[in-house]
Structure formats: C-alpha cells, structure tokens
Amino acid sequence: MREDLEADYDDSAGTETLRLRRLGISFYEALGDSVHAGVRLGRVGFGQSGRAATQGFDPVGYYAELDFAGAWPADGRLQAAFGASWRYASVDDGDETTQVEIDWETLELRPAIRLVLTPRLALALGASAIAVDGSERLRAASRSTTDFSADEAGGAFLELGYLPARDDRITLRLRGGNPEGLSLTFAHRY
Image (cartoon, rainbow, N blue to C red; front, side, top):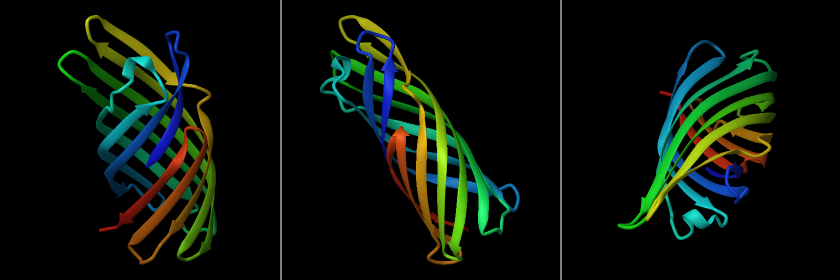
C-alpha cells in the first residue's frame, strides 16, 4: 500500500506530506454472515516532503491494526457497506549522534455502497473519515518532541473486488482526499 497524508505539525513547519508504504499480512474471522473482524501486522516505511528535523533519514518500522467490516444484505446485489479500523505505527532511524522516532495512531471510518456486478466482480464507492494523532521525537545534541495530526482528514475511495476462485479475492482500492493512495490486497479464505 502507498499513501500520502497531509499532516499539521504543532511547530513552525506547519503542514507536511507524509509518504507511507505498508506491506503486511491480515487475519480475519467471520463474526456473522456479513461482519468480519481482523488484525493486520506488517512493516511500514515513512518519508516526509522536506521537514528539516528528518532530512536525510529513512525511518522504517512496524504497524498493527484492528479492522471491522460488513455489508448488508450479505447476499444482495446492492449493499450498504461499513468499515472501521484503528492502527498504531512506529518508525525510527538514526546513527550514533542523531536519532529520530515517529509514532502515530489512526482511527478510520469507511461507509460505502457496494454493487455486485457479477458473482466474481464487485465495485464499491465510499467515503473515509480519519483522525491521526502522532509525535516525532528527535534526539541529537538537544532533544525535541513535535506532535502532528491529519490536516483536513477525509476523502473518498473507489474499490474493485475480483474473486478468481471461490475462496480467493483480489481488491484494488484507489483513495482521494487526505490521505490519497493506492492499495492492492490478495486474500484467501481457509
């Protein structure tokens, strides 16, 4: 997954673009015919558009996420879908003299309308609202902590789901707004 997030820092730097790259694995369990809950774990890479405090650093780390999703009616051609997730991420980089650590939490809500085009193909259009709460800690000759949050958090997404086999799914999601980005998911039901 690749995502660009506009973030407001509480120092004189103002708004910066955070470039996030995630690669992970997910485990989901059905809580009923139409509701699933899961956990996602993986690696995250982090970049910024020109923030002096992190210039020259390439922080990487991990993320953990709890996700809930559902669609009603479960077997309908036109469905009302909803998703909610909470994610924690932490990255760091540095050398003997300077260390940068960045961690943040993201809460996201995703209402959508899904149209099942064929038994193997579905299209969804939805909105997203997010809240981001993070901090950047710089340790050098002096120490500093700067907090950040999402700037104008929210947008829309378009999702295309393909079922190549009964227990497999490939999903492509294109996001606009804040954040914006692209994700590709491969899933198999055991």
